[in-house]
Length: 474
Image (cartoon, rainbow, N blue to C red; front, side, top):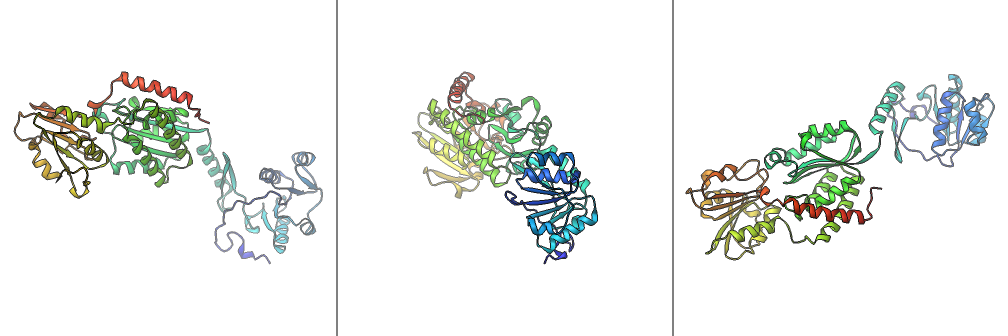
């Protein structure tokens, strides 16, 4: 026996949203007015066989019956219909509250779930307001409290969910900004988490990934094409319109492929960017801001980027190799003492390359010396100790993650001696004003930038791969 207290809202319990599979399950609809017509259409859209009972049919209902979409009984409701038809669900949608109440009671006696258009408290379930969304749908309910509020919620959500979705990219890099300008924009770990939290609140930004490296700050997204959304993202990230590049559709995949293949890095064909790209997308998934569309962008970009890199055989290129080349070319005839500051991923790659340079003595320093790997074999120091003894070295390479310069005038010792400082940090690790001192030469990330002619040649190869890859936006 159906219990009254089990009906939604009667005992204060909330209704449980479920998606019911109606294919092949007969639903009985009593009534033929506007409400009944709307419910009938909804049931048909969800694959339910519908039997409609009413003494008088409206034109719309009669059209559905004549086209075979609905079976009609032109009669008044009676309880015997429930016994005869044994429907899966019953909808009481007449214009008579007493009849609707009786239908719900009759259905309850027979253990059939019912919904009453007169009062949701008299039935067993509530029909939510629905919003189609691609292959899915979104339902909205106020637990029967307010049809007007449910309509408002549906319309508001429809505005957010409506429109065409596509890949979207906006960002800045050292091709559009100077090193000094980009230095003030690049986020540290805390700022990156804050950015993610802020962008999460933009409902139109359905999925996104933030890629922040020493060369670029980019947001990859799956979103609706909307100028206001673009402005909101730029505002939250502190980006100025002048320097921002924007891509949509397959152009986003093409751009990402150029990024992971190293074409858009300061050093063409830089290899480290692939790992940074993968880590950014993995982090976005972990923070629950990226889903299936970002995964598709990730996979397609890496696949295309691999083909691009293979075409110009750039596997051995990269910043660590160039730095090692500089150390080799600037070593003194009797050998040089080289100090490396920083033991992060880039620092380890630089160390492995520099250690192969003959006739140098390498010292490796880090804030926590215990974090310095045992290979390559060299002397290990703490950062403070290394800075205090900096005047003992001929070349210093810095790869520190700091928010301000750590190498300053007081660390240089006697003025006038020749000293090469290679600053790979961003923000920079070395006070740029030191380059004004006699004998001091500073190379920063901008010093390793490839000429435009080299970039254009590589990008021409990229277009060859893109056009012949068979990869398309669909």
